[in-house]
Amino acid sequence: MIASTSIGVTMLVTVYGFLGSRLLGLLAGTAIFFMIAAFFLAILFRLPTPEAHQDQASKQKGDPSYWQKACVFFHDDLDMTRRDILMGLLVASTVSILVPSSWWQALFWQSSEPGLMVWLWNAIVGLVIAVLTFGCSIGNVALAAVLWWHGVSPGGVMAFMLSSLLTFPMLGMYCKYYGLQTAIKLVSVLVLGVLVACLLMDMLMNHVAVDVIRHNVLVQQSETVRSLVTLVLNLLFGGLGVRMYLQGRQKENGCSMGSM
Image (tube, rainbow, N blue to C red):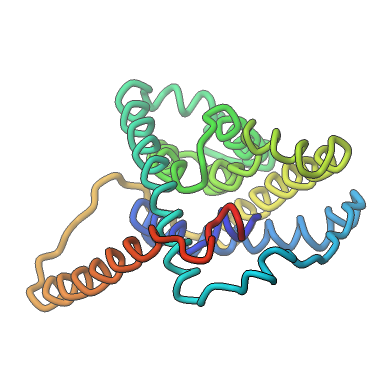
């Protein structure tokens, strides 16, 4: 779940578009989060080991081709994420205009000399905002960029993006599929994993004196060769995307995200 919501290709492309080089911070923070959650907290909370099983109906029908599977996933992802990204842009643009910087500074307890308590508070507030906004991982990136522009610590921004697994719809799904007891353990693992990983990330960046740059202006350099390469790549991958989307609409052999 952590990998699919935090370091999927669509997620990385979206983060790069909004946060640029901070993509490396996302990868590092997610890796720390994953290791803490999977190799330490999951054992500490005694999460049950999933049982391996095979879908007999799928086995009898025969698996569709890898190309068809890829097309169906591409189609379903695009149908799902386009609405999420649109809502994320709407919320982020509204918040960026209506909420002043002083409010963000007070909420996230920003000071000239940040320390352990400030970093921990930033992570907690980022997690709470993510839970209350009901957003998905990709839809949250635009608002995460707004938080970044207003001076929220890297760990606080990271906590906001990683907490898409803790929204109320996701909590309901955990209870439905895993049962209440396992769901409580799973949520505990995710919450503690997010807080510890983001706290370690802030401490690490402060220790190595990483110079973070905050701005909300994208500068486009005009270069003929680079613009031509960009145009060619857009046409190639845009055409491939249209082809895969149309192919994915067919859902041959019953291959869809719901049946996989």
